[in-house]
Image (cartoon, rainbow, N blue to C red; front, top):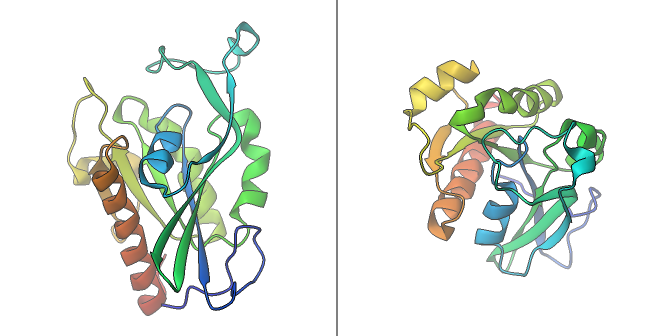
Length: 200
């Protein structure tokens, strides 16, 4: 698969022979996007977080994430070097509806995305799925298995989210480095399949 023509700014650059691959980590508010990027990044992630305040109480739905104290207001950025020629740039998107205006810019140059889901709030995933489907950006769904949440199998999640059979679904623990790496491997494998078959 050709990974060229994707750099962190959304433009084209070969970075002196290094192919930059831009990937998005998306999903609803409090689903674990920052946690996943932090778990796998080889650098200290750039985080644009603010503390939740009473001003957002009527705007941000904290159902299921009552202990959450901060929120990403722009982007969380991390990096993984696959080999000397390929570097992954990970962009965690903001989850609240009021920051969705940023998604269009963040998606420029992205080769693919992970839609991180929480089975306690699966409906929060619909917006992300619709966004990537409408723009033809290949994606996979990774279910972050929170403690105390009911664990469903991949087919049940696929049916609940009404996604096509060719879109991979996998379970993960966003806090765990190896589990989060398997999510990214799953996305890269899906991108190679898309490049071969032409299906998103």
